[in-house]
Image (cartoon, rainbow, N blue to C red; front, side, top):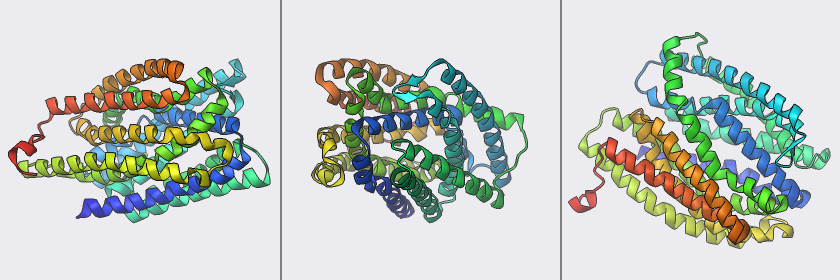
Length: 418
């Protein structure tokens, strides 16, 4: 079946894509102290936050409309997305500059280096637009080539700056900046050569993009708070060294996300295509695959945790061995997040993305509270507990909303059809 084949291709490219920086762990943990690794982890959090603010998940509208409108109209959407990205980029680079004048350091990061983040973020967003097109065209192989080549380039420059120029944690920052710039150019050229880029301001298209994207900003930020605020709390309540150790364990636990991302990348185009002309039989097929996916996800997370705990001492320097205790909890957290991801496309399909803001903000607020209480009582590992609970809140809220607003045959067990 096509979705299984596409999932396997995406999984393979995701494994290759993530395995490359993962295999870099022995070098990074050898040359970087837990403190330096902690700073790098927090810097990555800021990149994710800026990417959400600058990009606003505007590429989502490409998937939503890809099978509904002509290629020419899709190119207009992409051109107007890029115009919006330029405006948001200018706003956040100006804001960052003002902050850099007011503060010497933010969360252990020298403020001057924060100025690079908006540039990295907008380039990452252009690449996101490009890979979204490839996924919807079902060009999984080309998608894999883009993703893996991009990562190889960034890692290559990171190793150069780390081993030759001895730039410490900044090595990965510079490697990411240069690699992102090269693929920013490649991405633009690829879009133009495939006639997917038309720079023509269209008020109605901009409005439709913003109607989808603006409600997603709180959702994206809330999701980032749930996924990443733990390290900010650890930095303030424990130490920057603890952030570094926790982040290494987090990387192993996040292996689960490789599988959820791979599946969802194949699932979303198939899902939107099926629901463009839904029937009861098609809906039942979606439900069956959803149940199989959820069950397999939790089995997989336990298996991955066991294997990751065993191989950790062979991948990291001994000063990071304490990271093992965090793996199982992070893996389970991302299994719960994977459940949330399978229900997310329903809200895009019915144009109810505004509810995502409510659900994710609710989870984010609870996550902040959970982080403070659990880290206070349990130490660093309390952050992982908080993440699982917050992801669980998001998943339950989105499922209940979907169930109320879009009919699906979730009771097929009782009907004896599965």
